[in-house]
Image (tube, rainbow, N blue to C red; front, side, top):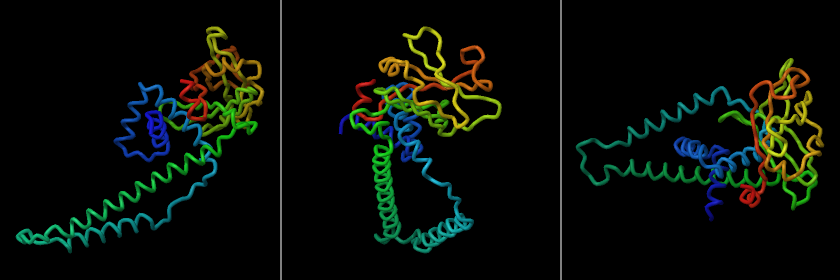
Length: 260
């Protein structure tokens, strides 16, 4: 496995939540100064975000906590019953404790294996779900994720650079009363100020051809932003408040390496 493969898998596990707390904190610190890792995390968030739309919220049963507590009490009782007196110096003193440790380690290995399988399954599902607009295998879409700090993504933007068709999808963003979301583009070739791509519709979408007047190479290097504006969009032609930003990244791993 190459270093790029390692980083890509680390990014996927971070997004899926299969890292422990210490590992996750370390990745969160590392992504602040590692552009490659940060880009891969954003790309995986964009790939996996649609999965959330397919999952219905299921509340745990009312007796779940009580069953967990009873099981913990049973394990503690069994452990105390199997404990040996302190003055017993027989070589088998630690046999029961050792057996329990071995069993727990086996269970831990099992669940880690399950987590690995879940990771692999999610990666396969992501590849299946993120398909090009025209189903052409050699034209993978580019994706931008809009989020504030470490919060869940608010929007996802997919762009087919060949046709310059876009698809804006809300992830956690919701329509706001008496306010509008507006998409902006900024690039050196367009001058120092951002340009409006369009005001999002009531369903938080935009026409697919909203980027048709822009060159594909410009789109790959542009910064995109989404701001909250008065109804109908900014009255000044510029964002009137702070915006959340995103950059386009390809959805296939090889193209990510070439893009960076």
